[in-house]
Image (cartoon, rainbow, N blue to C red):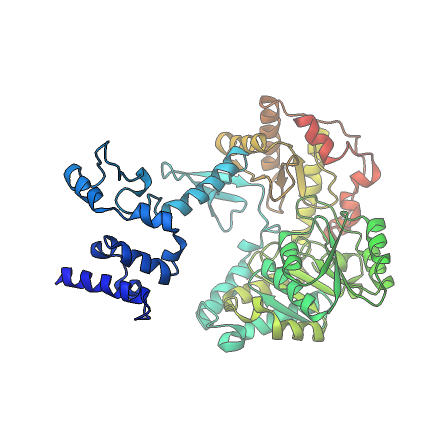
Length: 551
């Protein structure tokens, strides 16, 4: 019977306390029985032998275990009711023979909810736009409203599909054909049945694009940066990593996960970088890691000078060209190709998910480097390879952009034109020297208000950029003109921004006029002359000064 079982359980606990048995009774039973709980000797024995029960002090045990009078009192007045005069009254948190605590799930849910509430209070809670892009009609998309199920047409101005290659017939055709020929998935990791011929062809094309001996494809460039930088640190003993202050989160995470001694230099500051390099023994293993185009500032690294300093002080260079590949250089090989210094950059990382319009990431370098990463990188070895249709589509996109200048020319023309018009109308454009067009707001709440108004009142989609993507106080709009934006779309954007700026009383600034001209040859490679306004004229001040005026 159940009573007999409970009695035997209590006896086993007492025997264990006396050293007669050695197995914990709570493991088999899964719970404390009524008979066991009511037996003080048994419970004290449990405290002596059970790692969970042993966390209770003797005082806790006495408080949890009701005495006989207590049980009689409880039976008269209900499980949680006690006579006020009862000398054995349990404290409220121990009524019912156990402490009153939140269920485990509820405890953790509260912690998660608290974090979300903090983000909301700071005005940086992110709401994802539910978009349905329309191939053949970029940058137009359907935006779904989750509250009523309705959808509206919007014009996107913040996509990283910089050249609209995601809708190119060659890219779509390659993906569809390969899916029909090879199926949808890779079928495994690259080491175990997952290397498709399309992966091999893609890596050969990427190596050629960057003038390197070999390349290796990853599931994303976040993974490529993180796992490569971490793995490199373990291959280069007693090494030092020099990191640009504004490096991408993927690079920062890879550096933190590694065994590097880390030194941070000010963004694109050659004097600061050289001072740090000079402080280190020449024989030390060193790597300088930086981005060519910074995706949030719009700046471009002085790559030739960085490469010179790296050679001077016996360091390798690791350059993230994520926001440059496809858009800069004669064949879309990035800023290193544009500036003719591909041979001076040891390792290049890039993405297939932005200007190439597909998905995935990669690194390119020497045969020895790529073979080492292929053999050791956890982020490469222990994950399923990208689907062959994706690899095939990326290959088609790269090959097209190596031959075609049309997409680059139109994109740089639109970016240059929009930046000029924004400056003419007094918007606080940051000192960009690239296609990235950041307009500073300097306040998280107002930044979200601007983008909400753009979407709800003008059917224009721009995502607010807040902390932790950018430092607090430098919140901004990040606008990315593409080759498929029309003059009419640009005029509508400017009208909407002017109206909203006035409604929210946001500050404007005054820029010197720009009378410079540009050639199609410059636009085709994204030359320095395309975006040299801030190099030729005095700027309006730092982003911090603009942020202060917005406060």
